Image (cartoon, rainbow, N blue to C red; front, side):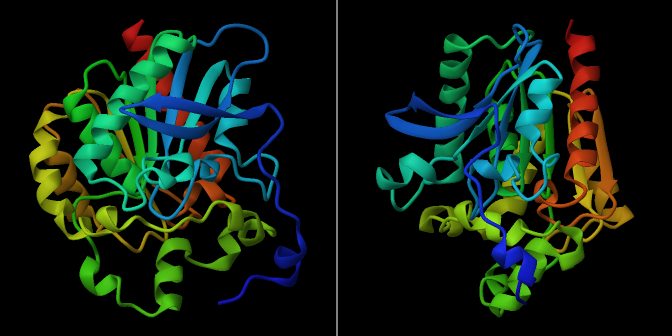
Length: 295
């Protein structure tokens, strides 16, 4: 499935105005990322955004349309927003070309959160926003790392809608459709702009895909912070009918708040689509509620 002519011609940008590259040293690795800070004073809190498989931190700074970026939106609302390249992506890819397991990535992210909080103003504290594999990582991290105030994750469930091992053998077009959904969900220029975001999935990360349902069963009873999970209208990787969502929520018994919601007009890659601003505003509104409770 090819992109439109307008999409192919639109030049890609590196990052939005007010967003700057950043490096963090954690667990012996140099992690790259993007940072946006409030222009008019210290932040009320800090959001750390964690991307999915085969993407990079720029997923949260969409360039195809001016209002897609989570980073610029959060900064305008008084929040520091850090989008990190996960271990095995960006700067750290050369250090660990095979990538890391989920547990190993969680250990790195946990340390990175502390490093960031010690070196930057984070206001009331840290909030996590994650997508797809990043949602798995965020759940694994908060299950074992105290101090995060709340988690919002999209594009991650507890049971796949397809056999993940078989999914890796699907034709490329089928895989593309599961990741993106209908072309009309994305503004012109999206697929040209995402050329700079796409990255190979490290082999050690890919090797664990089949294990997630069992891993979730272990992690779910440990989650003890407010949690919001969003499924796109055209989500194709995960089961998200009403029985599946009820079962998912029931396993998160220790979380004081569990919200499972849907985002209309969106595919799996919500933060790059036309619905990105709506999703980001809803996620940040959830964080506002959590900050009020924490305050």
